[in-house]
Length: 239
Length: 269
Image (cartoon, rainbow over all chains, first blue to last red; front, side, top):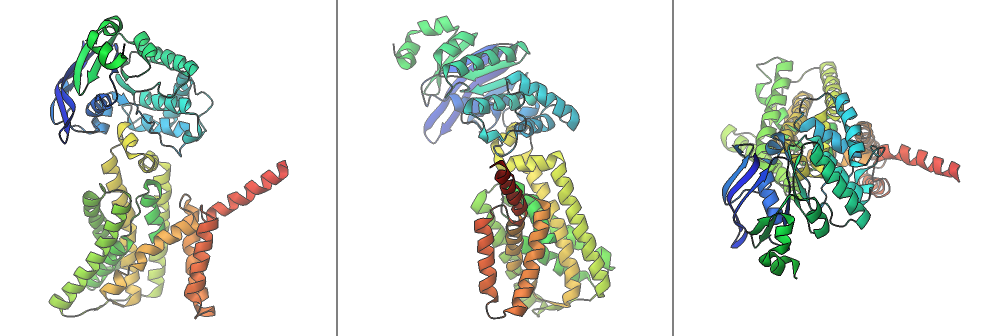
């Protein structure tokens, strides 16, 4: 079943096409990777899906409903969460406050504060931040900040999670841990759509990969098909 | 104090610095001046609050999309615009500059003011406790992230802004009865917009008791300096303000924590 589907998405910044008619779909339960050179329009595509920016034209269907034109908070309440390329936490607040907010305002909406607090500590353990609830968010290492951002997105109870360069700036051990986390999230039944530059990681976890270039989809397929694809090799992988 | 605490309810956590307190205060004053004759005292005051609430809703809808400096300048401009509009109206249409206000006796004014102060404090306290208080903080940290965890950013900003000005309006409506004579430059005095900001910073933005201390100390300080040193009043006042802001960025309320921290670190050594 298709959980997310985009049809002929177009977004122009002035004369520059960040999305020049992209068609794509994500099936329920999949992990889909999104790759492409810098400026290919990957983050723009995420911004279009999550409602941060409005497309010039096109349709985005999420669970059979057109979510185009909805505000980010409305899209979040329908079960679509995201993280940001540059971490956007509530920096001066504690780790648990960050997550608590997502519980209180996300899909679980009217949840009682004490339930939310208990669920927060479970979630912290899930992402590997147990015992750090009282730490001020911006004082953590970048790897932990990224975990927290994932935890905060999960706390809104999404069915589809968009991860924007989760692995950027992490060392090899942390990349391995992040990969493990992604697989764990999928096991919980959350579909994942992720932008990534760390080839080894994205080739390893993705069921399917979409490659963008100048706002156009240049290729799509399994990791093996993508690495074999001539255009992708020339444009992006440089081999 | 009402002005300061109310101002901080919204501007403290969200970091939207509003310079429109005078507008809301002045609206309250004018409500009393216009309606004071016919209606009972309490009704007039409630009216003052609602008028200010409605004005804030309008301001919120039109301006809260602006960020940072732009919002601040806009609110200040708005305040001045209202002052001049009222002045123009009074001179050209009513044909006077000031108005006489029906006065109430001092004891009534005192208790009304006290009630308003307590209600404002209660509002500030409960806003901080609920999830909406947390949401306001989140908006101050990152509006975009707040939006993406399901917070209806615009709605919360506008409602919080309007709510926080309600009490400013009631305070204006009450104070008007004490002054007996008002005109636009008294009612919409720009100083009324700056003082809450100063007092809040002076006392400590992040804690409610900080704002209470700030407002009380600054008011007493101003009175004391004015009577003791009438010539150097402004100079001394300025120096004290600068010293506090430079050396105590957390305000007076942060002072106690600083002292305990130092004591603890001294013990460790």
